[in-house]
Length: 311
Ligand code: MTE
Image (tube, rainbow, N blue to C red; front, side, top):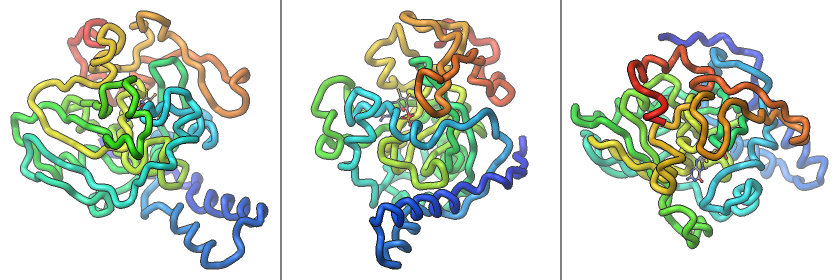
């Protein structure tokens, strides 16, 4: 399937830089032209196209998407990731590629990013906790990265790991999760055109609390599949154990496909609270869609599988 590049009206990059500059000027926080330029450069993303194919419902505000987070490495509350993740150093950053593939070893993220076409896509994100957002992500297709790694024919799954460094990620001193955070995808899921490796959102570099400098986004699956701050990618022949499955296998599975008919043992998955901005009291409750509304792209991956068994 080919993507059309029709969406031209959403030019968030320049506008957001302009707006944040204006805010700083207003607050009297910037005086010199040099600062202004370096600030703009820090925010600016590499050249990318805007893929309008996925334009959907009203977007979540940038503020909500960057202050209401799950990132247990920085604490268990929704506000802690934004408050506590300043300690994470994301530049320089390298990814270790290993396992059943030809390309092996550490590669610098900046060099990796230059190899692939970058694009912005607006996707729904549905958390297993029954809230959801609509977010403009920017990144490259995991399929492109996989092709670059040249997996061997016996590579059946892709396994990911988050950084483990309690100095930078203070809640790794606690035992809420067996660290590092781990995730995995079946090879065909990883190669699917929707699966993105994300380096930006809202036209800026991705903030630490959202998984800087590189995270996974799999929009038809519950948000916990979207592992943040990735340092390791390994091609394996057996289905990997992801963090949430390791913690509570009766509640969280490997597949984690969004499905309104398969409830979490402790709550219904039939509806979700859509966070679009403003006070949470005004967030509307909407019906959850099978595969989060992306059936046309992914239903074939699960033909003949019992989705209740493989949750
Ligand atoms: N990745 C790591 N390393 N640690 C985490 O705690 N939380 C997951 C996922 N990725 C998590 C993670 C969960 S439960 C969700 S819902 C999403 O990140 C939240 O992404 P967001 O904070 O950008 O909305």
